[in-house]
Length: 171
Length: 436
Image (cartoon, rainbow over all chains, first blue to last red; front, side):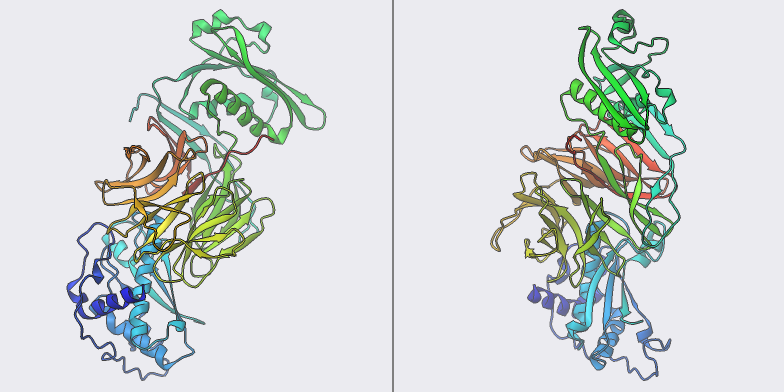
């Protein structure tokens, strides 16, 4: 399982720009299918220099949500700096801990969606641990479709509900 | 789906009593609707004469019996107006032959001191002019509805040969605003009360085989955790609260173990755990999602949803599986088959099948692999077999609201049970309980 996850992450870091919406009508595991080497997960830096970096609106660390395409758990390029910045904050602050909450839109089985949300949170966790955070600092969980940010049906609501939220302990 | 009959029974003034012992005090109120669409072709014509003196009681027993039998889809009620036999000697069988009844129910109620009621009833075969069965019982006034359900079960069993399920209970989740209540109600939706209420979601309630406990998933701690709650004492315990997500509890038929889904070791995988939370043991080992376990009635197999083949499908694995055991794929039609529930005879399972953008209740026969789609609505979820296998309870959506519905195993009869003031979802039909 760990090996698979590792291959998956390399794939995510290097090739996710070309993998946006899954063509299939449901979640699948194709994102780990092929990968090329070379992405340097530490190259991206937040350069955090604020007094309260977690809450400084000018800091990328104040951004706490990763959004996904339909039926995808790939972290899109635009959210990678955010995830890696939090990973480096965790690396530099060993006492800090986060809970990653994966979420889905409300179509389909609640329990199956719970598992899909877990996959999203696990994907963020894997990027973070490859970027210097310790696994013990991160708990990845899923809220499935149970905690929508936007109510109603339609893509505008659904797109806000397909996300992983980053919560720091004690906040 | 036959729409030849459309009966609507509205129960007014229906109150849900909530025993709110955690966060809230305001009781949740609702009115229950039962709607019956269609009906089987061979419905039994039965006349139910109002019992003597029952109008003096808080609940008319024959109203409850009539609604139960009608809701099953197997009976056609014959109007008894103008005929009032209470004892066999008062029955003129020709009158009932002329009205087309093949079965006749008569009885009386006697109010006794101390709030007790004696209830007598007889089920008569009109053609043979003979009694089929009967009952005389003394119950507290507060138990009149239970007595009526018991009578309906006796009639149902005598005329169909199957066990009746009117005395069973159901559980479901009611969402009102941002409040979530796990409720238990009689099979007709009456006597509903909350066993727990929260500001955070509750999902996946499921009954222990003896009906004394309910396992469910609560999100009160920012993540899903599996609890087991004893109904009589309201005592509850987190039985799966491991790192990551804990969900999808299913009881083993002996009530000693639960199958649960954990992300403890990565992904979402199925584990077995003792009902007190001890003895964790991993069951499935895939790199995909394995979830929604359901035990076979003999306790030897588990069916579950997995996307190991690329799309979510239903698989079966022995409970004795080792690392080298591979699961057997059961569903092949369509790209989205989820939420399996084993039938109580072990011969089939209900599940949700997606077809043309609709999510519908389907049943697959294990031996022949034949699939029958039973509903035609848009968003059906969480199918749960009645303990006699005759009906399947499920959640569906009407006008943006979640309601409960039930469909007969043959797809011929559907009924809606709705609480109009909130969203109702995640139904679980409780077990047949031993005779009191």
